[in-house]
Length: 142
Image (cartoon, rainbow, N blue to C red):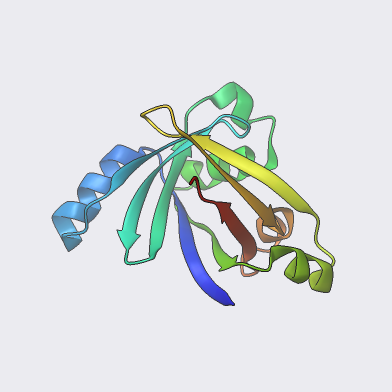
């Protein structure tokens, strides 16, 4: 099964962007956490089982060393905007094999210290060609 999982918006300040979305559209958000490997942080705007991810920079020194961090920085320098979109699947290995994509692990640390983990494929392709999605399978804790 494939479904749109989330859309990612690069913003200078995820907290300020979340306040604006609440004020203008009545949509609340939750603190997402930090992506230590990319030097980014996020807030999540839930839309049922899907969401909008507001991604900004947490650690500029780490961000400039990663492709994702550099793309976020570049979009922020131009005022922010759509970074990409993600398709969720429970058959990530099959999708990755079919599209000849490498599967990678990712994680983020929530404000409460809990680490959320996932496997994804195609992030590099999405960063190169933002109209393409990347694919994700979340590792949900018990």
